[in-house]
Amino acid sequence: MDIADYLKEKKRVVDAYLERALPGEDEYPPVIYQAMRYTIFSGGKRLRPILTIAACEALGKDEERALPAACAMELIHNYSLIHDDLPFIDDDELRRGKPTAHKVYGSAIALLAGDALLTLGFHQLAAMPPVDGDDSRNLLIIKEISEAAGTRGMIGGQVIDLQSEGEKVGVEVLNYIHSAKTGALLTTCLRVGGLLANASSDEMLNLTRYGRSMGLAFQIVDDILDVEGDERLTGKTTGKDAVRGKATYPAVVGMKRSKEMVEELLREAVAAAELLPRKGGMLPPIAHFITKRRL
Picture 1 (cartoon, one colour):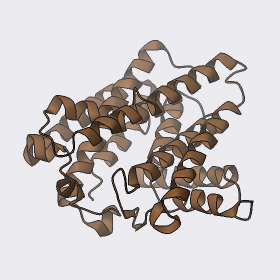
Picture 2 (tube, helix red, strand yellow):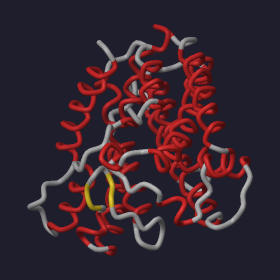
Picture 3 (cartoon, helix red, strand yellow):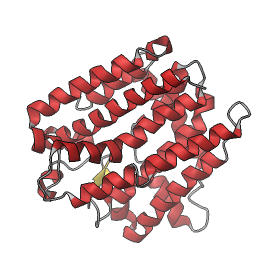
């Protein structure tokens, strides 16, 4: 199966699971469920849950084992998008080619919808059947995800990102921001897939290396697209980072070096994936997809 067909099929599977996991819009109070479903089903590549599934499959297990945790990651990811877009954080009006949640439902309901997606994500994790009858594996998965989504990961990176607006920062600070804000959760998607598949310590190490390289590459590509991207293709407002004085890779190291870094990180990720069983399965093609998103 080529990468386009694989991503399309896994997105279909993930979307079907999310449809079952989310309460219907007619439940009371309806507006919160409408806002949650609006965000989840406004598009998106489902990259994070697909990475969890692909990691699990590379180690010989099937998608059914990975689906509950994978979709919990997508719920948590979408909570972060709603909150990032709020007027008092990034103040974005466009996401996935559609108005952001706060533009449709107001900031208060959007904030609560994000909270609701976060808590639903952890509810999904808590309700997972034990991995091979081992409850401790489930607890480890919850611990890893909570750390990646918290102050040592996504939230910590967001704090430094906000504090760095309008400031002159070096590449070390920029690497921290995006390794925490984007990379931590993305890396954890790979690690969760490994934990679900009973990965060895060496396999976990290579999944982690792949995730860290791809997490940073993903953000550098985002920064490049904010300068060079077409809103019709990216679904996001371009040029906003420069207006807000945000630290980005093109601003700090230049566009040429930013593109070189993407290629270096791609090579690192593919090398790590190919040390896994089945030469990493679909993980190397996914890495190429992540770095070529402008196409």
